[in-house]
Length: 416
Image (cartoon, rainbow, N blue to C red):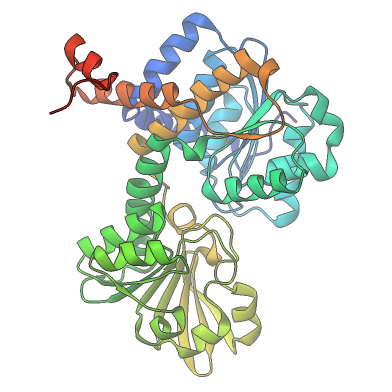
């Protein structure tokens, strides 16, 4: 089969959802119009491991409009929107994904994508790239480059580069300022709160809300939680980010102390075992745990399961663990709460990320011969173009420097 999805009959609803997403993604639609004319990806095979959502489908359609042949698997077992996967399959895309994948199917589907012998990889979390390097090194000579969508993946890629393990060039699309600011800060902030509320329906006003990590994602979550009336506590290991949190008006303390007072906990670090069993044992009865980092080991879910006297699902993807006579509630099995329990970032947010992806892919195809095995920052001119496209889509006008101002900013002679 050219696809593996849960139910191909869901395609009609999936197409309606993609249409709705595209109505919010004006900048990406402008890129699609250009790609349809210029065909910068004609005949290029693109292998993707991304969240199979309505927004990702809009990116896939854009790449196809540019001439690409696309195969896609999910980058998270719980993030696929089954109707969207069906819609892409119905449109002839090779898609291998369903919500609730087993670990075996998750990696089988990644291998199915690699079986198409892609020339470009598009990854979110680095599982596709790591599988290339561990299992399919025969593909490396034919790979022009790859792109990486998220912080966790970039961390892994930079570790590979340091160790001399990276064998083909990758663009860290995550590091583009328009992606980093809008997706990580505004997108993660809103969608994480959305996921927690859909999972639990708890009132956040008056709750002590603990955010582990104060990078761009953590800043967004903390801001939105405060906007909902929560008393926000931040935990951090980086002194500068901890200082930022203090100056932004949040309490900062170690997780061991925060565990004793928190009502809702969110991990947003990209690290492992940020909340451990020992932390959980200090928590109040009824504490809610959620993870908004890419992988499911920020919370020690295995440790919770082994220590629990009982585990039961009380709401969709909302599990009650009884440990030492107290109950804690875990959202989305410890996976990305915004996608496991909700729909991910708003479509308008993903327009920034996927404009960057589409334009960086076109840039890489045009300049592939110049690239070495290295983690590259996206070209600055692409990021500025994405910002301009989105402003145009929003109907916002900005000023333009006069020739006199340009001369002034490029010279040193004129002072006081």
